[in-house]
Image 1 (cartoon, rainbow, N blue to C red):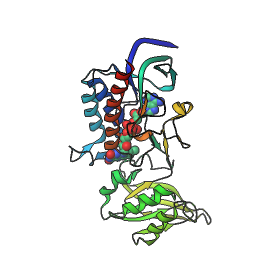
Image 2: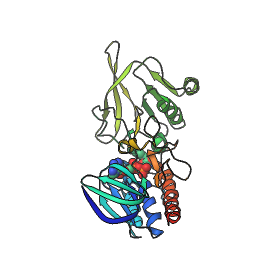
Image 3: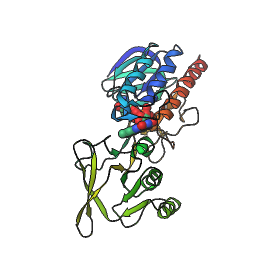
Image 4: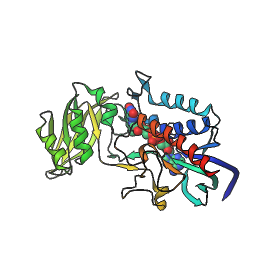
Length: 309
Ligand code: FAD
């Protein structure tokens, strides 16, 4: 492994909205800051067609918001290099970040690696992602006023988000079993809601579209193998959301599902290691909340490094 000579004040892992904001705050406080990213900067914003809930823009394309954030982040001298981080090692007051054949030495690390939504893996899902297929009701629900939606899943997220979507649309919850896994109180709320219907023992086999947007779902009944097609304008998929935290599990800073636990200052159980955005244990995973976490962590990293001197 090749150890780089520079000693950084802060290394930010992941250049989504959280990581970019953390790098902006750290570099603007004159900290020597490195942003390591294994893809293109922007994170999940690159997979988002239209963002309507980021203040300052009535509506903006996700990739454009990503580009603007990147420009404003880089103006204060942060370095950005490619790196797929596999491990962080604690070495006294230093933190060693391993990415491929390179290792980087730093005083503080901010983990901003995000989460990912489990996919159904059916035809049409990728093709119509952002054009009727969604994994986020808070993000995309408002685009479906007066429409008909299918929500796939039967856990807390599916039922809770399905109920949330009824303020805009009629919702059919399509679930592979004959009962829900969601908490009782969430189930009761859904059963009482006239705008929620259920299709049980149902496997989504395909998402249909007209080339531009979603037009329906093909459903197979698990017991009878009968195939039906339901006309819908959108499909919200809730079959699991997972943290991108595999590289940090050995640090003992995660809960049993792998979400990183922090306090309100984004500090983990290990001094000098912070976590922000979607990868941490929290309720609302949005651009605004990732950005807020990033500002707090960049600022706290500055205070932490001051205290080391
Ligand atoms: P991410 O944006 O996920 O970025 C994490 C980055 O870390 C990625 O670039 C990834 O490549 C990198 N990374 C991961 N692991 C490593 C590693 N080991 N080494 C190096 N780099 C690594 N929110 C809204 O507020 N409004 C919306 O309209 C909206 N629409 C959405 C639409 C879709 C389809 C999706 C999926 C999400 C949407 N969201 C929306 C949610 C929002 O995008 C996320 O909450 C936000 O991007 C989280 O930011 P983050 O910085 O925590 O992580």
